[in-house]
Length: 310
Picture (spheres, rainbow, N blue to C red):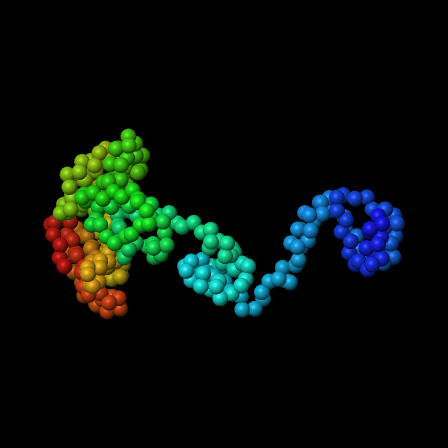
């Protein structure tokens, strides 16, 4: 009580009394007389002092002009550079509509956990997602040539000379004594039929055919009938633009110093694409010039007659 009254007499404007105290009448009278605000709390002195520092109005500490913010799609390296040029505690992260989605601070960059990624059906940087160099690649399952992907540690890498990556995945199920669901079996069977053009592709193998038949049995589908319906629906070019047709199955390749792009369009009747040839060729000329390709190829593959036109 004596300390409280002495503090008021020394000119305290606010007195915070901790530990769920009982305030004496003398202290209350002295506070009223001196217009001193009394605040009591159940918290101990240490906790109360920490809470006081957190009770400062945001407007007193926030920046209101020339705000540095980041977009959800910004790369970590770009964020680091901007943070080095400024000294704010936290930075707002906004979407394309400039709505705040969260905050990021230096702490997040120090303790960042890289995205764990499994590469499927490819193992070249040019065919992967943007920023793959910043990810932690933990596994690759593929049936193409070994490309230029580099990893920082040993990984689980399966690369088999078959016609479809789906063949590899399906056999991983079987090798581990797991039977895929009817839906999953149907999806994998569809992928094998699509990749191998129903076993007519030069990359198709006996393993693809055996695996697809096994999956078809699980899915309860007739391969011949299903493939016919799937290709009929999937090869329709009706209403598609030259860009959509050209990029529906497209990959980049870097051979020595040459940049090459190869696309493939599958159809059940090459004559159906005849009227689209000129617009597609004109579009390819634009792409070749704008993206500095040394060679750009589009294969028109006829599933029925088992041939391709370049």
